[in-house]
Length: 75
Image (cartoon, rainbow, N blue to C red; front, side, top):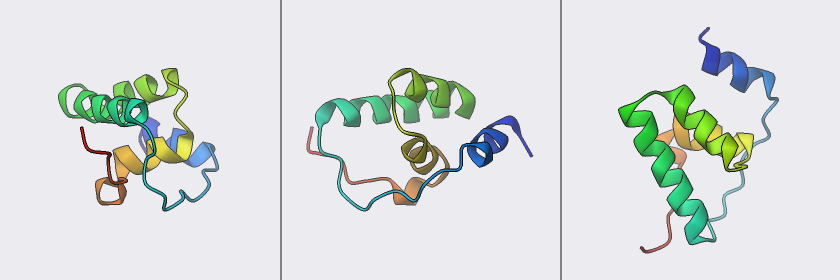
């Protein structure tokens, strides 16, 4: 089990809600984290999201399960 999976398992994450993201700032933070994940690695993206106080269940959803990402607001 890699470091990220251990961190996720240890966090006892709740199930995410099914509501759409409600603000542009959150959209921008998540979008940037996805770019960080693609260009650096998942742990760097996790640390970026944590530094912006993104909830653990959101981090798990957007980085580990892309098909469950929420619908973004129009840019």
